[in-house]
Length: 194
Image (tube, rainbow, N blue to C red; front, side):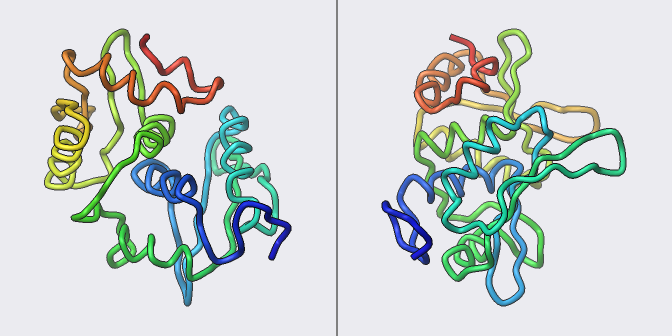
C-alpha cells in the first residue's frame, strides 16, 4: 500500500478507469516494456489540469509533475506512473505495434467524454471540435458511431489543414455540453458553450 485510503496498489477505481480511457483518446500516452506506464504531458499553461490528474493517480506515481523544456519555446508539465500490470491492460487495448488505435468495444462514461474533451477538444465560436487527427479515418468513424449510439451525439469529420478531426454537429452541441459540463474543471470551462 502506498498511503492510499480509497484503493490499493494494483487496482483502479471506476473513476480512474474512466479518466484513463478519456486520456488515451486524447493526449495521454503509454509506454511498455514488461508492464505499461501512463504518461501525462501538457503545456505548463495546463498546470491546474495536470495537477488534478496527478492527484487522481498519485498512488501510482513516484515523482510529482515536473517542468521540462522542449526543443522549442514550449514548457511542458508532465508526470508518469510506475510501470504496472494494472496499466498494461489499457496499453493492450489502445496500442498495437506502438501505434494508438481505438478498441473495438470502446465504452465511454460521461467522465471519459469530459476528459477527452479537456485533453483534445476545442471551441471556435459555436463550433465544437475534437482533435482526432492522430486516428485513421475508420477509427474516426468508429468514434462518431460511439458518440451516436451511446450518447445520441451526432458528429461529422472536418478537415483541419491536411488532417481530419471530429466536429460535433450543431444540433448536438448543447446536448454534448450538458453531458460533459458537470465534469469539466474550472480551468477548462472556457471550452464550454453553455
